[in-house]
Image (cartoon, rainbow, N blue to C red; front, side, top):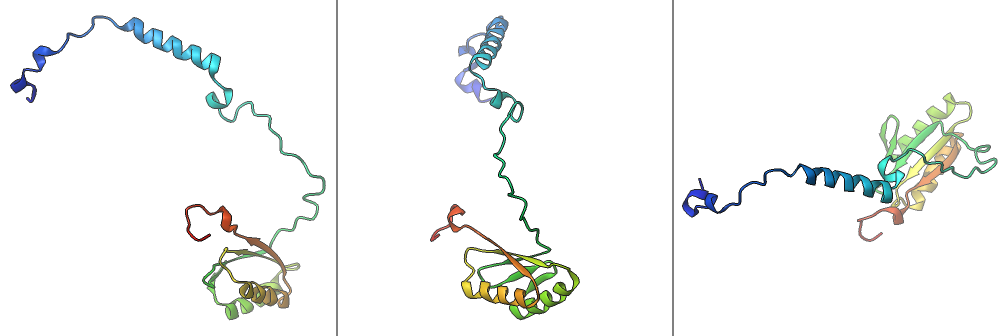
Length: 149
């Protein structure tokens, strides 16, 4: 072994005989500190929280749920429920889907890099197909760790 050439084993202190009292003292002090300084949010997260969000009257009265959702990337790619589409393909897709729904609503989720002319083209194609357009845009300030935004 590595201790034999240096004779380290002979220089070690012997083990203490009984340290059970130290264990119980530490456990008792931990219990005391948690009971005095502990928070029920730390010890039991999610329990005893009576926080209520404010209720705004009529907030859900005019809420509109979309019937179709597309995602638009800054590179011009458009993702539908049936896969990737180009703008001309999207117009055909919207016409086909607009006929099957009574009140079609299109939710367009846009990336922060999508240009305005792409949004205008999608909106025009959706309105031609009879869709009501709802917008959801990505907040560029909300992205962390990306340069130039």
